[in-house]
Length: 354
Image (cartoon, rainbow, N blue to C red; front, side, top):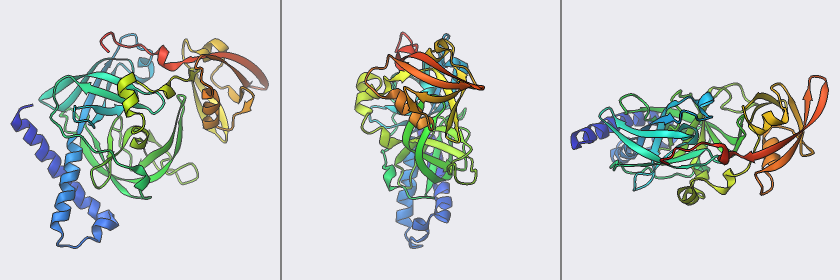
């Protein structure tokens, strides 16, 4: 990127962040209470927001032709990432770069920088990318989500537009709670915001000081929680999960927690029951005879009261490859199935260049 294009990008982000700050002040008690003549404080905060937004880049991924994940994620994937390292290290959501063959970072319509996959962490859901040319973008500082107040306004930034400029918008944190995904995934302290953004994959969530709070993962229908009125929104993976594992991810390409038993089954929870909705082809679940529609009643003798208990029982122990006993209800019959769980990380195909 030449100096003129770089300056244009910064000005655009500064203008957008300044506009957003005005909207932020309208709904933030802290900013509304600031003295009207405190222009220096507002200017400084606007600069922090602009700097944060400038750290967000577009991520374009072409998956391997024989990638097993292409069936659900597609071969061409578009999303966002955030520069978090002085060396240009980019944090994104892991499923974007799963079984990637080619990865590019889009800074604007005039510059695309190739990148390599540094890490994919199944347990947290994070992915790391290293650009193969200097980005010359200041990294976004990592925040602390424990300081988030309920209903606090936050800024969401994506970098996935065709021009690479991304979109900035204001949202509110509506809940923070454990989250269990249908794809054998569970994290604690997930952040839920509203209104929803459709360009959520890898999008950045910032607080008023321009500190990174989370990375966008999903659009959800119940952002406020199961016991609250339905409210569409997004789920963000909190950066608090990244801090203790960042070094391990950079050195090992993953974490030890990602090497855990995997069955290859998609499930949903309803009323404390876990029902199978899909069985992955060639998976341990398929080999065991598990079928869509089955209710999983017990795993290794432990009653399944929901997805979280199901997953944590599956993942216990230190050996990913182990036999798992499943008691399932199929129609009016109860059956016992034996599955040989495997290490999910060993089932993923990697590019020869990674």
